[in-house]
Length: 117
Length: 108
Image (cartoon, each protein chain N blue to C red):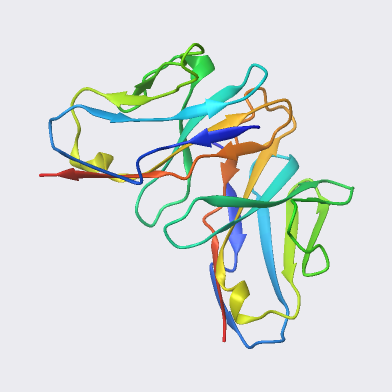
């Protein structure tokens, strides 16, 4: 199956700093990528939908200036958490679908654990 | 409103017993339904989708439009089935609407 990677897998940062998380589709071109946030023992919360070459579509309640998303190529999307605060600590997961996807299957990255001190 | 409901947060059954993870949905059109699974320390992965009508790892799920359900079933649970299971719905776009998830524990 298609493989999606995320980097870093774990990051610890100080409050007020910015953190960039990369999401890559390794063996396919991803026209659409999704960014999720998962709190402990809870389901995934969709943050935004990222389409290559266009602005991301954010879900209600997600601050676009706080969570900057860039999908500059068909294999890379980045999520930058700006001026991070402890409440931003969470597990961030990306997923991707290929341009030829018929059944809307999303392929998931392994996730990034962000801890803001 | 579009919604996926998994009423059980936790389901614990003995090895060899039948398993049924419930999923109900609310959607005005013709949705695609999926079951995703997340094993411990692993990424989310697709288990099965209703349109393929296949059995994966002994699991099956039938879409019941009358009851708006897509329950996941397995006749004989195995210890390696212990995981988080998420039911998800896809409508017109590529976005998935997720259920809250059910943690399945298979006791030896």
